Picture (cartoon, rainbow, N blue to C red):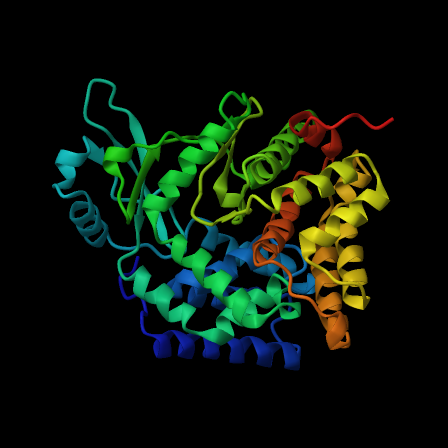
Length: 429
């Protein structure tokens, strides 16, 4: 437990630099064995920094291909704590935030409020509570860490940290300023729980009637800019269901795919933070989706092109797929367009090859191929360069993380059939 959150830009940069020096030296000298000691140091430093620094650790804990395979298991085990058990803020500090934000003593706001959090992550921590009234409804109260806004703003002013995150998403082949602006906008939105509440309701409306998708109900009168209260949902973690029967794992994978891509293609929005802590699995095949802080909106004029790409992939129509990519990517003829088309085709293999088993090797290969494409793009003539739309940055984050989650379920799924059902696309002849 800690309230000594480093908030200033220089202090946060110094700690990141020290961590980078240790990890770099260990890599050069071949020290650290399987990387367990190094991973533990990284988890401690990134967890205490919270904010964007902790998000880097979260991604490294589950996105295949970000950490060398020889050290993957050690980093995944150590950094996994950043998804739900990051350093906590004290009960006194959390109480102050809740009472200041909601304008009343905590015992008037809630019939009970557990001081020990259910989970703590990069932006805030979640507490179990009960509402007043005969029902005594159990709720989850997400409260921002005190000082987190200033800490995040310090990170957003750190161009090298943002560029490093952007490179993970493939932004080095884009216009740097545009991509940094996109990163800053999305991460600032994660600090606005009023906006998150609105998006939670939008996703609930989109998936209303789906028996397998659970969006926790919002408790608006107990929510504010820094406090978000929803119904409490219980279930199992991704790690706990990887050994479930194959039929149940297939049902989970189908539900995950439907939630993500119906959101994209029908709702025009995608939840771009697909880390496993945001999914709660039920034994009857339902999944509760918890976090709506990082949502990228797909503009109205781009949605038909996105749908066209997906429909073509479901129908295994290679020519239509290639045609639909051009307006979606805003590409121009040349080597970069060829690279982008080949990479996109690789990402859509679960639809073209459906039924398809997404593996960790496949998920990691997408990260590797993105890196290779970024290197190859440096040699592309200026006349053939083009600037991809800003939303593609977070689409890459979704792609890498989401496929890594599906790979843990390790099951063959007819993803094209799942999409055709909500797109109204015809079956393959």
